[in-house]
Image (tube, rainbow, N blue to C red; front, top):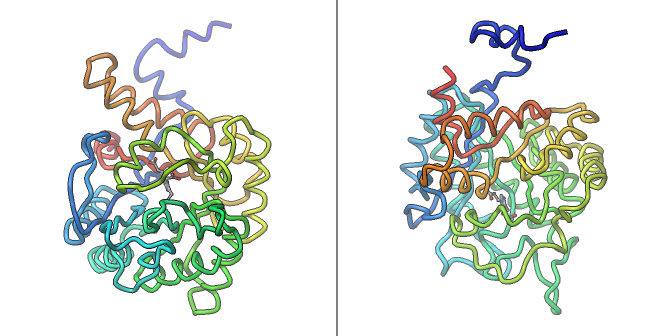
Length: 318
Ligand code: PBG
């Protein structure tokens, strides 16, 4: 056996390639804010105004991407301890969703991050108890309200990312109870307490003190990622996600093996920033690194990849 025979020419390599990244499986995470601006730790990524985000959604649809995932960034003086702007009809995320839906209709899939942390003054993903812990069950109704507000604003998919136990079930019941049977749930099922979310915290002007280790998963736990995915499937998740992606390919492969619904992986802000920073220094070939990093995620079993390079990558892949 001489495996090198199949590597002799570009045509031969193309013939035997096992996976290929498709634009239609890419989702662009994007930020909508009242106060737009660049994000220094994520060169090339911006906080967009409501008008701008509608143009981004049009680009996403035009490039044949699978979808866009919206995050809302309220002004600091709009944050409160319960994060009420998260479900306000005129909250920044709802306004962004409406603008995107009006611009592209059903031409691409409009997704909304369903989590309180961008909206709370303390930066946690849920309500706090008097002694400062995140109160799981008291938070669930807020997630249900938030998902409903997002569905009403035009989201095709809501994506609970707060790692509250029971969040998928609570959201499904609220959506069904209000006539949104067709709104899908993409559950951030296996979400780890990761240092690689660092640049995202700048992007959403996070006020978090401390960390999320009491609700996001311990990076050391592989089996637990499977368990989280199984629970979300049992609660009715239409799709499940593993996050971060590149450092959690084992978890991703495990989940892909047991899941009977599509599996997404989120290439997070830190994964983006590291490649951009190394490339800016001339230390790695930027385009090859981007393509390789996303290909590895697909090879490990992701059906859908959320990546900040979505638009650019789709352009090269055509
Ligand atoms: C929570 C949320 C986070 C990210 C996506 N949804 C931040 C966190 O959990 O601290 C991180 C995404 C990224 O780093 O690109 N709303």
